Length: 214
Image (tube, rainbow, N blue to C red; front, side):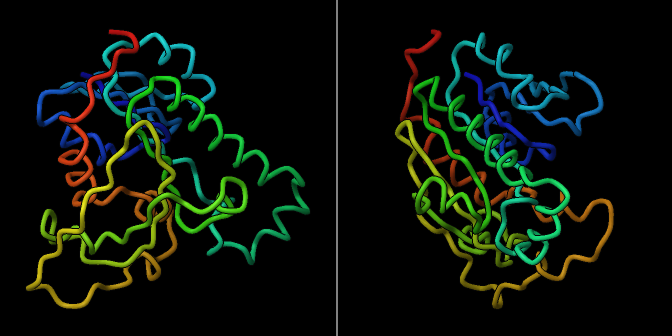
């Protein structure tokens, strides 16, 4: 089976799937060139550019998408006015990418989610289907003991995994909020927590066998 992950640079989300023997495709312009490494194909494309090729894939089991939140997250609302002055369509363009992700994910009829922090997508799509913080899955990854409210818009029979906390850990920290400025700040803040990734894999990998493209 294959899992597709859109707007994904780190590949954290697909690791449990690949470890279990599935194949994965990552799509993100930050990938410098196309390559395949240990079952993971990296495509250096935008979502729009990648869709014609991805649509030909068969045996797809899951689709995840992490559309860029820089122009959507309410945590950055204080910059919206200046961004709008420079480009009145800046937010519409960001929403369009998220819409491309959701439209593509629905095409396969398999479990999917579209991930974003608390953002203007709630005004466009309505309230998210699920929310979580990384610390809620520390039993699967103790290093994820931090706060970051994350929203998921889901479909295709997606199953939200139950929380799995490590009771021996101290209170979660706020490392995301305190991340220092720098070229890697955005990728650090947006990296998918491994505990959540493992939990989603466990909840969804055996319950759906797609008919599309098989």
